[in-house]
Image (cartoon, rainbow, N blue to C red; front, side, top):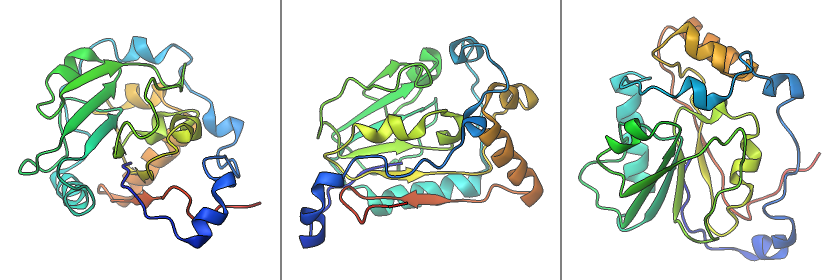
Length: 212
């Protein structure tokens, strides 16, 4: 998930009053339910220095970031880890990381600083509108029980979300037990495919709203 400034057209200006509001819920309560009811902070108490997707997937993602993210942007990397998927040769003005394990985040070479927060407990982020040009979320959105609330506050930049339907934690079954039913289903899709398929969902602020 990442954001880039978008030049509003007449349609966007006309419909700004509806921008940033949830138009339709996609996940049901059952889809948001966790199989493991323990707090996420307990599961992520210990660092896991592993990769969750294959090299081809990472290369495709890095190419997407290289294409969409401009140098000197200020970037917020939600649900980050010890590995950065940003292109090494591109210099950004600032990269802030978020996650649930400080040891993992401290190993990420691209983060200027980071913070630890459980977004399933509290979706509010202490950032101002326009604080970042881009908000990223890589192979992790399926871990969120309320994903729409996590991006609801970002009304200044446009938001680009990446959703990988085949992401799995290297700890195998233990990771899936900690996730929502939605995550379990997406992980199953990855096993059926036999590889790490790449999916990207890109949305923009003030784009055509979704109605029921």
